[in-house]
Image 1 (cartoon, rainbow, N blue to C red):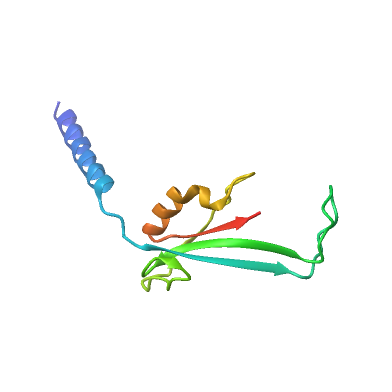
Image 2 (image 1 turned 30 degrees about the vertical axis):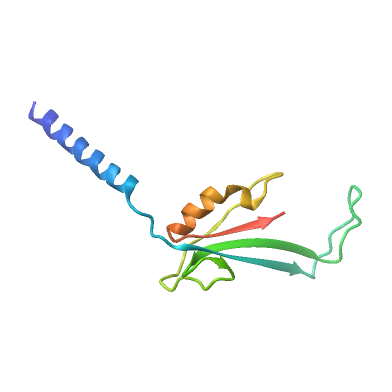
Length: 117
């Protein structure tokens, strides 16, 4: 019987802690944004299915990061370093279609890079 009481007390305490974490304020970092392009000149893209091909390969990437104040090319928040997550939105998706996730991740101190295929 005593074990049941202790078990219930521990569960109640865990429930209170979980509720506190759920309503806790986010870290509050603003959203910085930067667009970058990477080009590989060493490998061409072959022609295929109506695509004429290209002498180089280019990958455009949109990067969101914790910033001191939000905006495009905003300065990064100073208390990093920040873990970087690579987010691939999948077929026919677009990077900015998942801003609800990006905003939450950046607010908690994660950088997010999304390649634009």
